[in-house]
Image (cartoon, rainbow over all chains, first blue to last red; front, side, top):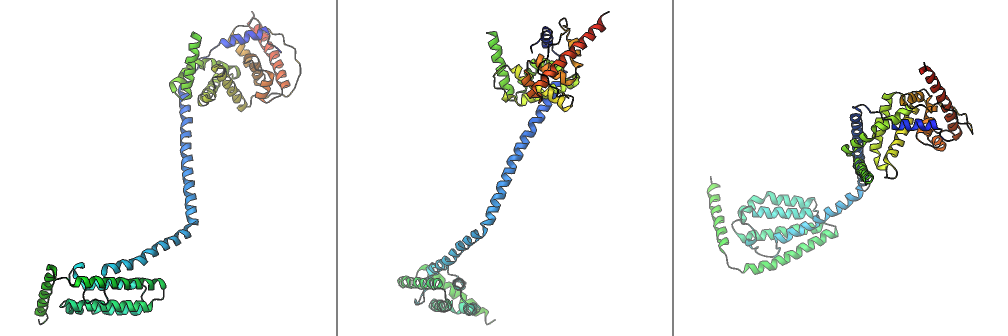
Length: 233
Length: 185
């Protein structure tokens, strides 16, 4: 079917026609466009946020599933410093079981030095898993400490002898009471380091008394004078 | 040369409008809104409703302007969009009730419209057609759609489209004859 002449006329007449829309129509279009575009942005934002939340949840679930494995690994890591710490203390304290004297140059010369040394020994003993007997012995040593300090402050030789005896006793107790091979090894290493310290002491012992030693002796002498004056009162 | 310049200017304007440039969009609106409202008016009797359809049509056009690939005229692209929007409006109103009667061939109805040149009278006559007839008539006569395209667009058979056109033409003829009689002294 084709168009008749009349239909062509209608078409051409109507094609020329223009109807002006109302003035507010553009404002309405603009408002609708802004409305349509805003939700899209927020929708995108929601998408991103939800994706991030899902990722977080997945990560947490993954961590939860592998959590037990992570804890065991942490235990392994924590056990390492426990093995190393006694060795550090060994080298710093340089305790000699046989040596007659320990060089005072390496340690601060205060009245509480002895007490500190013993405390460090207690820590060493604790780290090698000492049993209750050893703990009790250490407690008794600590309780009797003030008296020893007073008496040992008089002579350095006596002080060092006592120290070495205590250390030897502690080591023996630790050796007896420990069953763990690793701990035994640690104790053996401690003994070895003590032997080294002994050798060092032998060298240092031959040195002449320095200015610091003289000061220390003076302090001890003064302390004894004060003590003698106070105790009778 | 002037035609080429106009084309390139229009393309620039469309490209800007594609980037949601409001000024460019407004310029396009100014250029085509009157023509497009006339198109809406073919299908929708009420001018207010026609404006609503035009508003939705322009919004849709600006939001989907990237779909225009600069193949064919922009006016044609916009016009097709507005026509579809008008048909959607009639569908929502459920006013397109096309009977499924099918005819393979229809004679061309004699039209008393040869002398008709007044758009108001023509539009009034078209407005008096039922929406189904009117839609097929406007698509075929005014928009140059083929029966196949009309059938696809309105989801009807090709035969139904033909029958609707025949009936529309016949009815329009009667309406115009009656109008002529009324105006005759």
